[in-house]
Length: 136
Image (cartoon, rainbow, N blue to C red; front, side, top):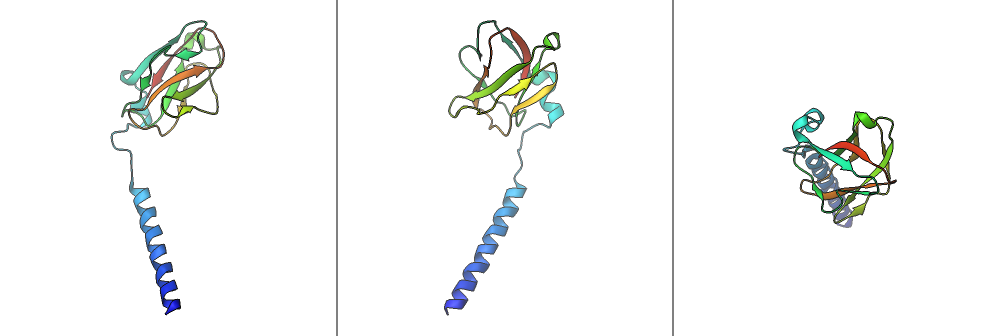
């Protein structure tokens, strides 16, 4: 009897793992746009960090939308030589451990797989004026 019980548990365990794996693969992000739709002009907001500040917005938070799965940041082409190290700080979870170097007008995924409605701000490594765009 002991062998049958052990085998039965093993078979049930494999069945549960297989079912769980199938369900995990089937889950998608409904309402999330692809990268092109996420980064189009209608979804972008200006970021304009004044000189002497390390936080943007200086008070309050941005809030992620259902348009993107990630928080994306792009510099203004007029500041193309101005490389800035930036990280995302979340209202409830704190700041990221790593900095992302943003240069020029290329888009950078600065935080990935962020839930809709998550509140956050940008923390800059150094002082100095900076302009760019965010799409979230």
